[in-house]
Amino acid sequence: MTTQNTLIRYNLILGSKRISNYFWLIISFLGGVGFFLAGLSSYLQIQMLPFTKIDSISFIPQGIVMTFYGSIGILLSLFLFANIMFNVGGGYNKYDKTLNKVEIFRLGFPTQNREIYLSYDFKDIRSIKLSIQEGLNPKREIYLCTKDQRQIPLTRVGEPLLLSSIEEEAVDLSLFLNVPLEN
Image (cartoon, rainbow, N blue to C red):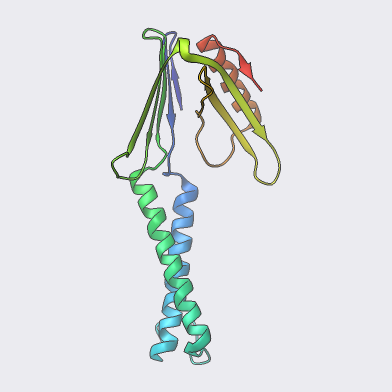
């Protein structure tokens, strides 16, 4: 989401609160609980899952492996839940012509460095870099390149954006900041 007037441009960066993360949270939790209960049922010889027959599963080796996989699935879902609740990766990019500053803010896990805040003067910005990598794991990212050779990512992490929209965003940003666009 981009809000823009002639002097200030504000980009809201979506963090971990994406639909795909909610989907994987539910899938990993349900799968983990299913595997854990199946392994526990084979150990206790009690039918804990109504839709399966556990009598044919011996605890060693199948039951213990299912219990392990279930524990890993539940732990993964807890990690995804924490990511979503703390909105890891969320934040904003603010480009202010009145102050001649670029502000980049991101959230992390609740530790000493939960909030990442970067601020650069326009005079310290060398260019905007558009990085496009196609293939099995495509990446389409916009970087803010500073004069001291830093490359700060400006786009959100996750599913790649449409090629036309990311190109348009990079061109608009380079025109707004009055810096060259690198490819």
